[in-house]
Image (cartoon, rainbow, N blue to C red):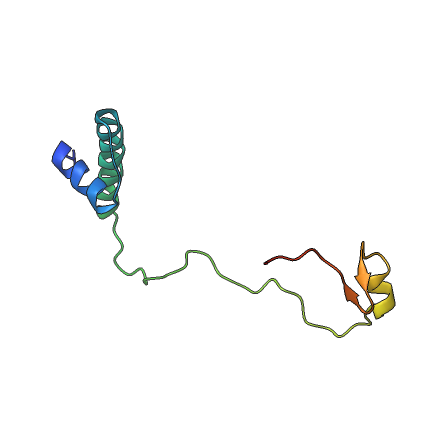
Length: 95
């Protein structure tokens, strides 16, 4: 399905894109190619195939949350470049 120049300009306007003549020719060819690929997919027999939103199975890859000993406050603050008592001292972020 070959897109016309006007159709490419309409798509560009919907996407709020400015296009040169070279862009219209270049992207018009690419968009036409994409639509041709969809035409090929229309011919695939999907009878009996269940619809799916995910092509592969999704599983949680995070480890279990296990309570473990933590560093003491002194150990955490030991490598602080600057500290103010029990806190890290940083430069102001907002004035």
